[in-house]
Image 1 (cartoon, rainbow, N blue to C red):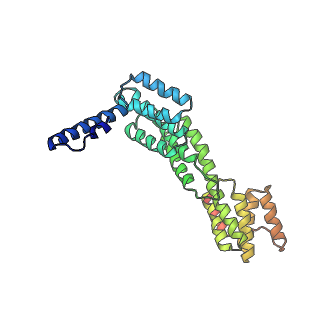
Image 2 (image 1 turned 135 degrees about the horizontal axis):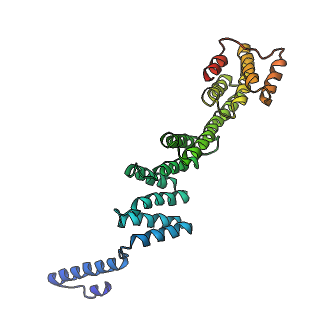
Image 3 (image 1 turned 180 degrees about the vertical axis):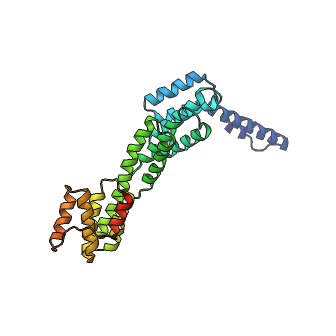
Length: 279
C-alpha cells in the first residue's frame, strides 16, 4: 500500500501535502493493526487464568496476569492478593529482585493486611535462597538475617517466625563458617595474628554456632605458635570445660601435652574475660 504512493515522483506542492497526509494515515492504520487490542476481563476470570498459569509453572505469564488483575481492577478485593501472588510467581521463577520489589510494594501499601507476615517471610526467603558458599561474599547471608529477624521481631507468634528462627540459626552458622575459612587460611600461611582475630570473632559473635569448638582449638594452635603459653592453656581449659568429649579438645590437649603443658585457667586472659561475659 505504501509503495503505491510513490508511483509518480513529480507532484505539485498541494499534491505532495496530500500524499504526506495519506502516508501518515496509512502508517497509523498499520501501527494500530499491529498493536494488540486492550480487552478488559472480569476479575475472577483474570485471577483464575493467573492461578492456572502458576500451577502450570508458567511463572512469567502468571506474574503478568496477576499484575493485570491489579491494573484492570485496582479497587477490587482481588487486587492486593494479586500483588502478593505476582511476587510469589517471581520468587518461584528465581527472579528474586523482582519478587523483593513486589513484596516491598505490597508491604508499603498493605501494612495491616493479614498476608503481610507472609510477605515479610517470603522476602527473607528471597535472600536466604541466594546465600552462597563460605568461600564467596556473604552479602546475601547478612541480608537474609536482617529480613528473617524482622519476621521474628514483628510476628513472633506466627508459623513464619518459627521457620525464620531456624533459618536465622543456619545463616548465623554460615557466617561463622566464613570466618573459620579465612582463619584457617591465615593459619596455614603462618599469619597467626590475622588468624587469631578471625577465631576470636567466631567466639565473640557466633558463640552459639557449631564452629566454636574448632575455633577454640585453632586459637590454642596459634597461641602456641606465637609462644603465648598462658592464652593457649586458658583457651584449652575453656574448651575442655565446655566441650570435654569433643575431638577438638583432644587435639588441643595433645598439643599442650607435647610441650609438657596442660590446660589451665588463667585469670585475666582474653578467653576467660570473653567467655565469662558470654555466660
